[in-house]
Image (cartoon, rainbow, N blue to C red; front, side):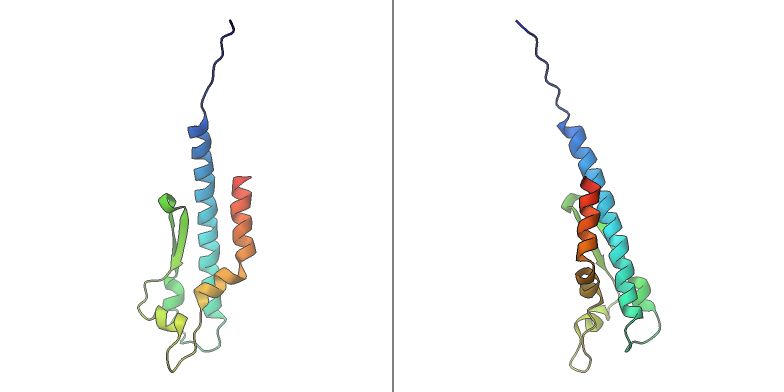
Length: 112
């Protein structure tokens, strides 16, 4: 009778995949954070204090396998969504929309 040994390395593999995904999400966050700041920089109608632009940050939440890009500046929602007297400047949404292909590439390359 032959002896058969089965080694389970799935936990190690899953750890490697999660690490790679976390690194990819960090790259996505850094990229979109910069693109959103550039979107504000290149908008013709803006107040040039730079507060909103400098406040854009990102956070990777590994448990959710997600990255969040945003700002804690109170008036950011009014700039992004507009008001009755001001057209929207969707700097966050535009940054993501413009870079969908690059976001996908970050993820694909990290997992290949």
